[in-house]
Image (cartoon, rainbow, N blue to C red; front, top):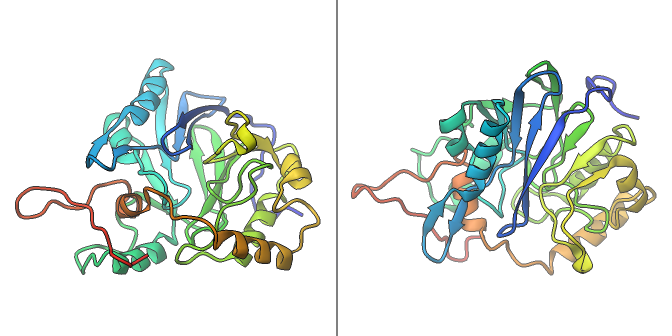
Length: 297
């Protein structure tokens, strides 16, 4: 059963607009309160040409243009977790439209882990203070008049949160579309058993709740999709449908993860995203650099 402490509100149906980034197969969202002009942005993207060392903002500009065109008021920029496959565009959007940047409170664990990997030194704060708000399990917040809440869903990373806004849940990398299965759990701090339990928590939401994915890769050549329901996942998810036991899931996930390559943008993504989407500080010459930890991941 669903935890009754969550303020579940199936009658509120926010308008959800998706923005697909083909470079990283990421889907970002603008979520509008149906009763006002307030909105939130979930998992925005900052573009990078890694080979050229060039940052640009086409993906974020599309979101900004949509919000301005509809006359919306941005209140929250939600990061479902510290992404390892794309850079966050949240600070760029915030500078132009306002809003607060929020992430799960276990960002501190991620910052501590990767602060060491990237040898960031004592000047890199590991307390989550780069973000405007840190969400804990069950925390609520408002987008206009719509009450939203955060569910702690670790396993992919320790800081993963699923954000529920009305009848829409934004699951980050915890789940993929039913034919895509589930996220990997082999990054530092990941745990396949925790991921299984987090998935069951999400799938305890009402059957007709809409679920929105952070990524889709078009398995078997199908068109890119990003919206499904709790019921569809429970019936058809190839890794985590009803009837799959935790032991079976952990064995599958562990074996599968051992065959996966590292995400192409993991090195720049984590350095930026653990700073709430900001680039590392400039050096004494005024230049910004990203580090490559040799044999460090």
